[in-house]
Image (cartoon, rainbow, N blue to C red):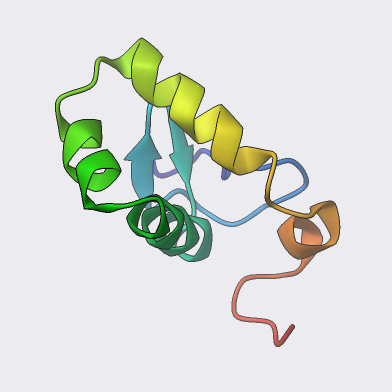
Length: 79
């Protein structure tokens, strides 16, 4: 899994953690976790009990909120 790139379009950073059946770099993973928390404690806890297909749906919903210019910036770059 370490030789894969982040699942977000145009992001070339190395994989840090799983997100559904895909994987995200560290920066996008932390953004994804923060996004889930903002949606409420119930959503944050519910995610742990979801199947991979359900997680893919949630991840796809979040991915729509990531701007393409954010995804193309190198990891650690100031925005």
